Length: 163
Image (tube, rainbow, N blue to C red; front, side, top):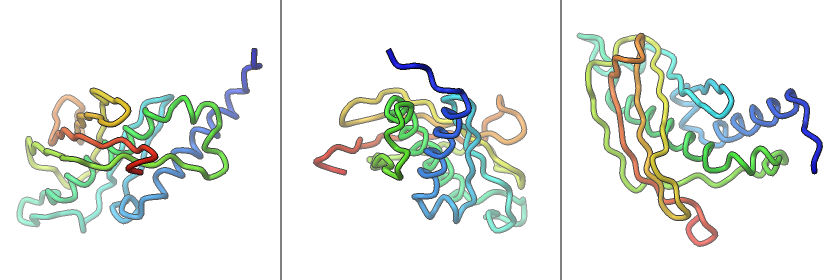
């Protein structure tokens, strides 16, 4: 039986794996999306920037920025959850990051205007198999119970054949 690792070693490994995933997608940096990690739970954060406003008369977050934010939360959340055991075993320490799933379809429901402030999103993996996964994402701003957008996506999981 393997001796348990110190908690700080595990936290450092998890943070490095998440940072590696996020930094591997330039569009995530372009939008400025960040992730808050608490154990195995990830919350995506889209810090407010004026250039994310689509309608300056309201003002409202651009629908494309909102959709991209939700898809980023879904893909990173799915990758994170589907590779949890490998990450815990230290398989991604040497920069060997897992391949990310590919989007099959992604449907966004805009529930209310995205206000000019920070936005948050959390993904829930409904199904994840060897070839296919289904993910639901919810986004809110000031109040977790008042969603401003939600999405459902279907993804092709990476294999040696399609990666």
